[in-house]
Image 1 (cartoon, rainbow, N blue to C red):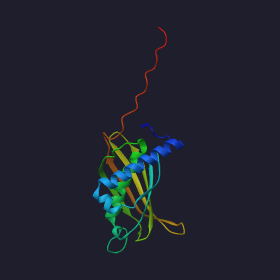
Image 2: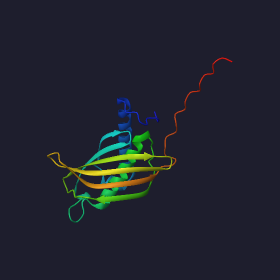
Image 3: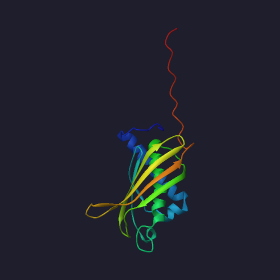
Image 4: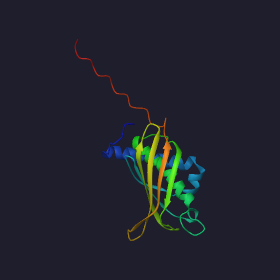
Length: 173
């Protein structure tokens, strides 16, 4: 089961989505900050290296000018990068932040729905490199990128153990 890397069969997608949903729920329960800021975040889809979530903004999410708060954007990025990393190989732990870069391109306000597209670009033995787009989705279907982020996480020791391969039978002597 742990070797789901690259498997996009319907069964693998169902397994992957269930795994990422369980991680989302566990993170919301285990972290007071995630539970406070992101209690209504929803997983829309998960595939190999990609997690798409949505969030409708509330007064908790905005700054004094009424726009999506930069600290909330950073929290969203931190939270969703773990989901994308976990979607690559069904790992339970997703590492610790090493570096984060955020660009604020536009604004989103209370009541706006945002879609968060989080892609694990590379998950290696020590580091994972993840990109995030927070996109405001208007009722007419138009979209505006609000925030773009890059997040590097230290992931050594978080990968699931490899599934043992059965020994090859020896043929005649």
